[in-house]
Amino acid sequence: MNFSRSRLAVIGLAIALAGLAALSLMIGYVDLSPRRLIAGTLAGDLVPQRILLDIRLPRTVLCLAVGAALGIAGAAMQGLLRNPLAEPGLLGVSSGAALGAVLALYTGFADAFYLALPLAGFAGTAIAVAFVFALAGRYTGATTLILAGVAVSSLCGALISLILNWSPNPTAMSEIVFWMMGSLADRSSRDVGLALPFIAAGAVLLLGCGRGLRALTLGEDTARSLGIDLGRLRFRILVGSAAAVGAAVSVSGAIGFIGLVAPHLMRPLAGGDPGRLLPLSALAGAVLLMLADIGVRLLHGGGPELKLGVLTALVGAPFFLVLILRTRGEIP
Amino acid sequence: MSVLSGKNLGVAVRDRQLIEGIDFELRAGELTGIIGANGAGKSTLLKALAGLLPCSGRIMLDGRPLQTHSPSGRACRIAYLAQGHSAHWPLPVREVVALGRLPHGRGNGPEDAAIVDRVLRATDALGLAERNVLTLSGGERARVMLARALAVEPKVLLADEPLAALDPAHQISIMQLFAAKAAAGLAIGVVLHDLTLAARFCSRLVLLHEGRVLAAGTPREVFDDALLAEAFGIRALHFEHGGLRLPIPWQLTGKNGKPAGGDPVAGNSAAA
Image 1: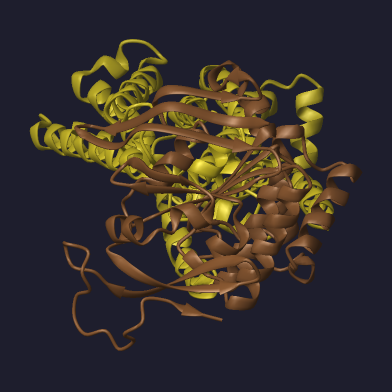
Image 2: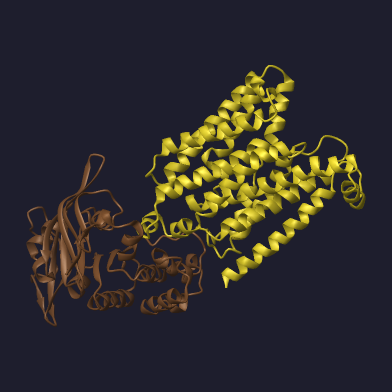
């Protein structure tokens, strides 16, 4: 019963995503009707072609990929830690990326070449996750892993504050702060080329964890007695989330709540199964971020664009509160 | 025939030796009770036998060292029923029980479904099949988790305090189920705190004390007054019924084995 329900949900979400993606290609700051946009692009007209293929298409593809990365990593993290409050950033993945990117902005390395900023973010993720893994060790329980993640995240946060504190001028500081708010504006196909392979590889790694996460529902000892290698499962999830979320944060900045809310929304449709939740949560994350990114463009009133991470937090936080109120008592 | 055996088993965590020098054997067709005071090492022994804890000594499963079995091969042969029956997500009971089929493959074929139905019926939990596992009472959850372990269709079942949350009727029915499963050829090792049920249903008992085997044998041999005093610090009344000698824990003993405090019943044993 639940299986067919989750399959229906996958189909419904995929259709919604396709519709939103099409809508996202049609919406932007240049007033061009969809008909003129498409006709102009097909006719090889330079302006519509540039707008569609160089501006809106990369933005849409990135939005889809980043949302899916946050959604699937959130589901995997909640399953691994058996905690509905876990989110992709809990183990230092996002804060590592943020620290790397902020360092790049502070030192000016970000301007060295086009992909310097996302690459620095990605390096930050890799270092942070390696740290967490070394700190927690291979055979410890979920609590130690969370503590190690929180410690590394806090350290990254402290270092970011230190950099802000030392930042030479208000311009550098505002650049850093704006980057941390998260946005998908003005991204190009080169950003897509950088992020997409890592997000895809991470998602594939995470999608293969369903069986282990399902067994882990009954606790670590029982999962191991069912033949699950927990050390390997944990390593796989950390590497998978680091690749997917690290790449996502590196190109988009910090975007909160998607990784927390998407698994929550989808859990009833997955029948509580943490394995089935993975693809559902990826799709839901993409749909949510697409909605938010269309939202920031529609809300644009001539001033600076509302940052994507600000909107997801503004909508996500109250929404999350409602979810907690509705589901309290069901979750231990 | 010995299915799972351990020789000179030891488990140490940091500087503490949890169990030491334990020889242990589970035979097909036998229900073996593992008893002992809190902290005696019962759960540690069970986990070591299940391959869940690194331990010294040698464990043989099906005539081969345990570590030479592949993880899935081991998981198909040994079912481990953990203490506390934790479950974390709102899965339907039927799917929780189907997790026991994981070592055998995907676990969602028609044959798997038939096995799940059978073990749910055996544990009197078929009526719970569509319920959310998080909404079950402690007793219901205990039965569902036992069904999950039986769904593995193992050669060995290691159960850590499976009776902990059960009412007397379900305690008896679960012990009857264990006895029937043992009679059908399963080798069962079960940690028990109820000495009376242990004496009634187990063919063999292993009494642990401070990480070592204090006694092993038939219930009649193990439930000796001196052994009970040493292992638990209690004195038991003994109740003879149907050829069984059933201990009823009665009072605490002092350090020297003498009764501590007043004894409302003067007699050392009651006979029926």
